[in-house]
Length: 455
Image 1 (cartoon, one colour):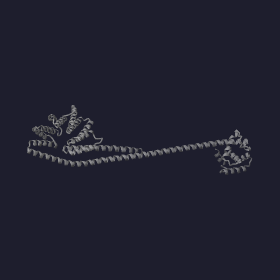
Image 2 (tube, rainbow, N blue to C red):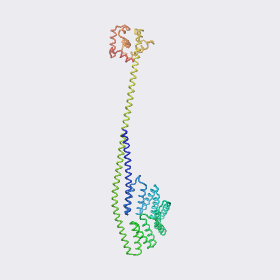
Image 3 (tube, one colour):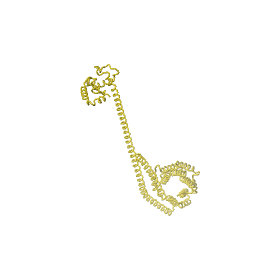
């Protein structure tokens, strides 16, 4: 039973731990898979599909998801919403990313999160938002001491320059953008910096410089959005110069880019359907593991309850049997004690009757007419006590019958009784026979019967 109880306790615990680890592993794999798919869609410029992947990865978060993964996914969601113009949501995700990176003390990622928050404030516009952005830049600059590599420094100067361009502080913007170009950039960072330099020169009316930096932007690694921005600048310059041929050329290029974006979005829609199906299958497997976990846990609990109840029933049965055995033993001991007491009492009576026999013969008390008198001598006290007890036990007997019963107790035969009572042995025998019949016994068992009632 102990082994069964042990199995009942250990088995659900093992299943709980195993299923918990499996659920933990499956959840981490799902988040990792969705994050990788989202990064793939970002690389091929399918931003809507990337947004769906990162959003589903956020839904798959649990208590076991690492803070680093959360920070990466929040940062990508913030960037996508910022590019889509949903600045409030982008700001919320940027702050979540900052909090996640602060939990693991990743200083470089914390710095980048401050820059992302500042960039969102810049694009939201407004004097108050620009002040918030400046505070965020100052916070990012406070991490320069030893924690900031060259690419991150370039990113800081880039974001400050973009902020000044949006504020139409073109000289300050060009200063920081030129400074950012002296640092290495990751991804399409160089194209973004050159593009904003071109925008600044376009706003200043320096067309040649704007065209030069548009060419530099197109030479750098860039995406559809950067290329579309370049041709939008060139189309604006052509419109200002009233160059019809250039306007037609750049407008056709812009239409082609829009067609490319539309094809990518259609492909993204198909990928989203596939992603939803794969996510559904993954969640089904997770739910199935959960059902197996709780089912096995309930079975283990029921097994433990059954074993405990059976153990309690057996324990109570054993306790009842022990009490019954103790009671039987006690009763047997009392019975033996009473039997021993009766044997002792009978021996005492037998001894007293022997002594009483000699006293009766010598004193002649039985011949007295007042043998049941009140004035009892101390030497014959036992005789009178025994006689009184016999009278109370057998009140229906006559005095002669009581005398014969007393002499029978003293183990006298008919001849001895005839000498004391002055009767013939034959009369005494008949009286004994009559007394035995009245008492419901035989003449041979009369003394034993009287002893049982007297003891």
